[in-house]
Image 1 (tube, rainbow, N blue to C red):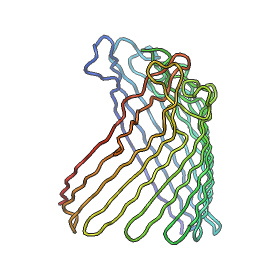
Image 2: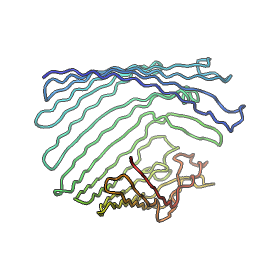
Image 3: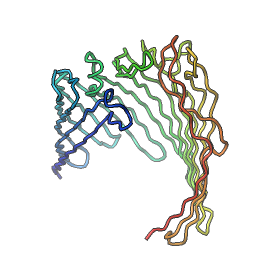
Image 4: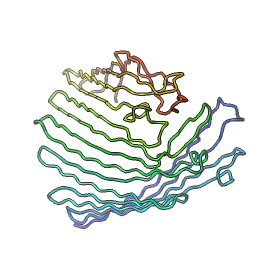
Length: 358
């Protein structure tokens, strides 16, 4: 039968960025940021095959500073507000599930933004299918606008198709193809040492495919994933690899992961995992152009022994057991001028854990 459900929510968040204790007072900034958010969703379930959601929410972001340099409005306090209404209808006939939704935002600084969403899913015996198209909106943060008052909000478009098929009683394969594009992406750039800047590029994004294979049996499970993505940028020179536009700086195009769990009996379990990242590009120390970093293979292992009631547990294992170099590549730079060099990554780590649950 018909039924209404009301779901209110409220959240509050306080932050104190740049509140460093070991930096001279003459150069440190002391802003404080507050975020209030409240909303109400009403869901009407009109029988087993149709459901309608109606909602409204409001967000208030407030910045406050005690320093002499004020915000953009000339004061030591600034406020931005965003109000939104949203709706989503879900229809579930015998031939699948159809979701159609939309969200309208009104930002006090940037005006209106419309974000549609449509999705269709179908699950049958031994297989499933999904197609999705969605939009999103994100306004610049207070500190980003303080650095560059001419920033524009981001608008994102996502398209996705997924198909899954059972390969037997205990194995399932899923394939996914996606297209993601962010228009006017808000990006941090470092055009020169000591200079921080936020800017909008024309667009960025990626296109890719993912494969996921899951298998389960009485004494364990295995899940392996493979992904390939190709960068898509326009005028985002800080993140694009010169001469190889298929890459974003710092990110691999190819990635393989595998996680297994084996129950060995008498309280023992073994959990190995493998992560393989294809070549990545970054700026080595002193280089003015992005160069390639070799494929990285990370092998991890965790072994656990637990008492029958799991009150006492011993775990031992390690990460990066092959002790390979895994630098944290900073994902930006200036072609012809260089970028920040990679930070040291974690090498081999060995761990022992004792747990007692009571």
